[in-house]
Image 1 (cartoon, one colour):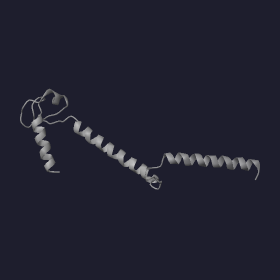
Image 2: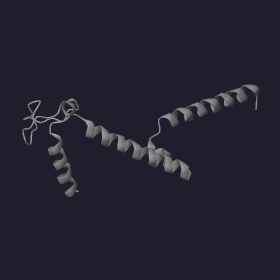
Image 3: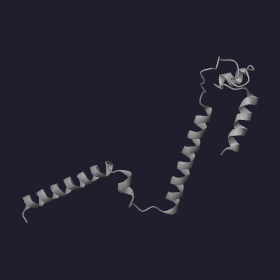
Image 4: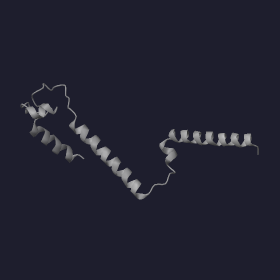
Length: 109
């Protein structure tokens, strides 16, 4: 093998490695399904998934509530005035009606 051929094959090998590196960046999750993980990696992934799900549930609970009949100060169920703190949190029911609603919803889970 001549010096020119050696340099050419070396350059081709480097180009091939660079292409493989770029292709790794474009692989999907299915492509990594054959990758080997130990128990700690799996446990960590499960725990992170659980934490993200819990954060999302809490964000949904804390989101401001909307109802077409809400006048901005009275409970939509009983008509009593809602405390300012609950109004600031974007709630549309008084404490008692919200508690009753949550108790009813737990019965049907």
